[in-house]
Image (tube, rainbow, N blue to C red; front, side):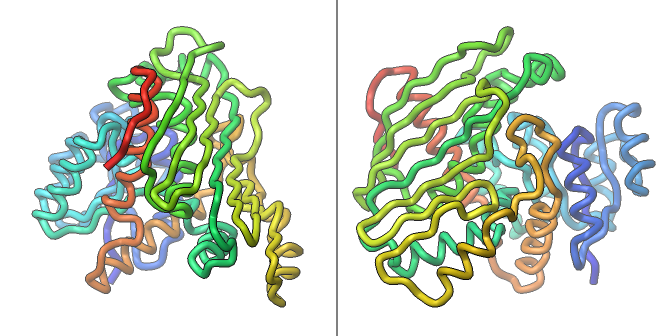
Length: 347
């Protein structure tokens, strides 16, 4: 049975969700809601679905069994909780919310309602990401010593001026870290495990009329003892693909968007040469490095299919609320360290 999905919000990312739902096995788009008729009517016409004038109207429709939240980051909480209380499964565009407290409220609401909660961290589904995760989990790096994430992107002043919510603490929740680099923070923590301590600095160097950072650097100590760095910016013209590096006593690997740029281990396997040959040139978009719309919706399709499978199999989604919360916790700790000038201990 196909699961009917409704989208909350009709902005840029909602279009990617709509295309992903259209391609997802076992799902169909019922409609989308917005407070503005001039937003939901053209969206509904483009995606051949219904337009709802309010969230309440959409949640009252029995054909809507799951809801995809595509509002600004700081407005995820209320529609997610309302959907859960209406008995609808919930898929939330990253970040889950902009503070751990607000994340916890969404998680609690979904747990109490017995509905699925998934967060759109689609980079985990890239083949290259899964290969990196498998190499870590099977001990191929030996003692993992370093894990680093670099997101050197570019956003014009016009990007921030295009929406009143952009670049605000209340609705964006942060800048280069919370909005742009959060996918890489999620991947880094997924690969390296929990973070123990963070020391960080942030600044706003080139953009005007924004409250949040456009440059951030953080040093991390993971619970494993490994060290790492997170660098994030939206002022590195013309923008480069996001990059993650894992190093250990018996191996090193570099992930650049969907490409594996380096894959070297002390104990080679027959598959390694094939991985080096086949995992170069996998990235076929700009990865959002300079244009936030220059991404594929294929990853989102996998998010929806994973959520549907979790619903049908009666298990938590692989990227559930607790998984989605981890990157928010790390980023909020970076902001705290940058503000106080002190090392922040997590957990």
